Image 1 (cartoon, rainbow, N blue to C red):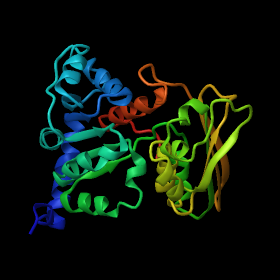
Image 2 (cartoon, helix red, strand yellow):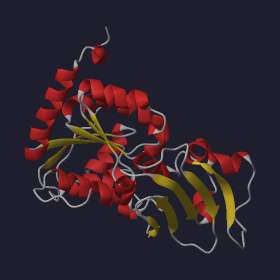
Image 3 (cartoon, helix red, strand yellow):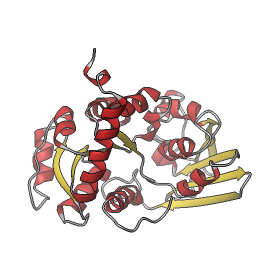
Image 4 (cartoon, rainbow, N blue to C red):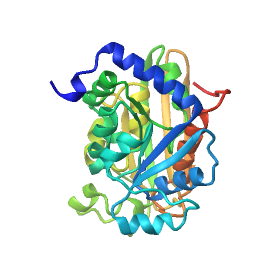
Length: 293
């Protein structure tokens, strides 16, 4: 029998209870990937801006990169493997390229720890990861990231949702290197008006734009699911910031929402609010006052 299969339901419940107590008091945080998101969260932890949480380890693409990053911190943090992150930490922030998601998700969830997932598109259709977490007492957490309204989506999902549409508009330069654009030879540099590059279900769009559908993936997981949530990706030369618009129809309420995200200083392709949503989540875990669903 494999190690992960040896846990009983009672073991999983016990580990969740122990984890809940530990989260309320002191939480050891690991960060896999120190790009725009990971570095911003690491600096907040380093400045003691998140009560009850301590940064204890990171994983970087090289020891050289880790050394450069540690030079920006007050306290140097060990750079370890993904497997060591899973053993050293109570929760691990996954802030990696999509193709590396499995490499961190499996050891973290296999160890019964909390996975804070930013590559949300990689969770679509992954019931195996949910089952793994269920067996070991682990948890998968999806911060709000670059989208608003997840609370509302979860609330209307208690009743019946009829329709969810997501429209993502980005400056052409943000999409120019996407595999789908390159493979199809789409010329985006000299656009004079907005062009829809792809439309379909979130499942279909995620196959072509895995790094550009995390917003829609989070919405679909909160609501109708990826096969019933509709999505469009537009290249819009009139835009400076990435824009996401969501339209929802349900038996309890109909609503629409739109957000324009300012880019982070480290990476123009990543919204500043994305890392801030992780910081807000970590602060909430140690707070006695919880706001929102």
